[in-house]
Image 1 (tube, rainbow, N blue to C red):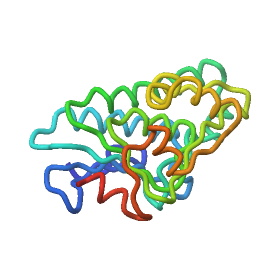
Image 2: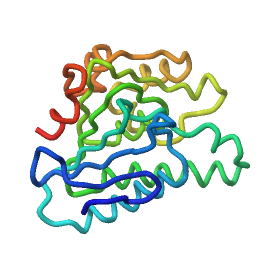
Image 3: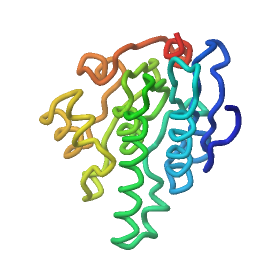
Image 4: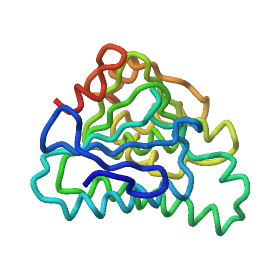
Length: 199
């Protein structure tokens, strides 16, 4: 199971918990921003996980103390309407792939979880955030609608009104605020998200 799933996405055994897989967004120089390669890597990893036997759970996390800064804006800026639609469709498929696994998927969130990164976290079955985590849907500030599932996944967790507030105003939630809102299931000390998610 070890090795690259594709597009700077790693799939490997959790270092501390047998039977738990780690799915790692591994593009820290870009704060794990999602481009087409990473989305393809997530989809490939979900296919591999669906075929694995002997696993109990999956932990989704980012490298470099950051979960994900969302969609790579440089990638998005170069797309025409058809390309943007294809990008969003692929992102939806990646999120649905996580939810469709017959294993619980737990997001271990450190640092930023913005836009599509928050949408991926919301698609997981549980979310563990450390004290450095913060959450936002900045798409509305750029004149675009959330496109990777936030209107469904995030709204189910925190309600449509709070989701609309985050999208329209750019409001940022701290880890403590996210826990109170129901976006986060567990809040832990800095650096403890991956271990708690594995546990």
